[in-house]
Length: 182
Image (cartoon, rainbow, N blue to C red):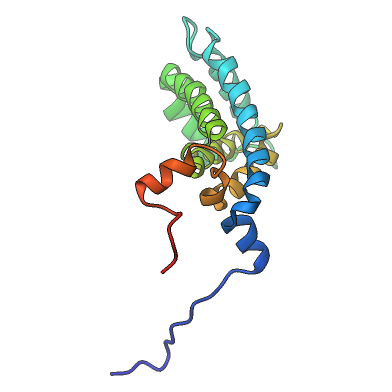
């Protein structure tokens, strides 16, 4: 039986999107964005990894202070931290603060290294984006909105953003995305 309500159409991206996300000529732009975002994550991650308050003998003390500050922001008519997220921080993160502290510290460093080297750029940008969401949900602004926007763009540009990096060799070796069109 033929379906009349369904007709297969291949939709194409506008020229700007094709250039930014699918043309290696734009990969120089993504290299600049990638290195900037990587530097932000590397500096922050390295500072945490080498700090006793994050990964050493006092692991968790800095994150505990951060979370307690977020929990204070749950109150008032227009709270900066939503109740559900504050409950997550209080009931899930605080009881295991040492583990979460190390996850944050080494996670930031891993995101920075992945972006700097251009290795699995889309995945690294996704996890950076995930951390930015969590920092924003905890009521912290700082550079997080800028890194969040750049992270979204790097995720969208995943096949082009790491072209000037290890992804140029890693992704074809894995079978994506640079191959001759059919």
